[in-house]
Amino acid sequence: MSEIAANMAGNVWKILVKEGDQVEAGQDVAILESMKMEIPIASEQAGTIKALKVKEEDFVNEGDVICEIE
Image (tube, rainbow, N blue to C red; front, side, top):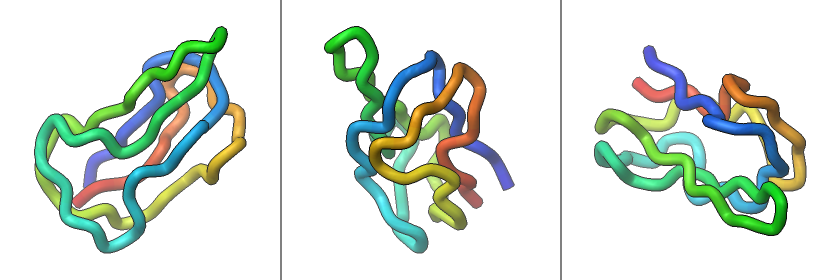
């Protein structure tokens, strides 16, 4: 199982997937908002979303896990 982590600190503006969704490598799974910019977070591999670790409007720091993928 792999993890998809935030690449910078910010608020989780939108979650684009749900548990059980199939994702492709490079597909956006969430969008962070930081300093009025939208930063997409993409999966580095194809797989199935096993667990979401954040919800919309949560604050995350760089390296915090957004979701787990298998």
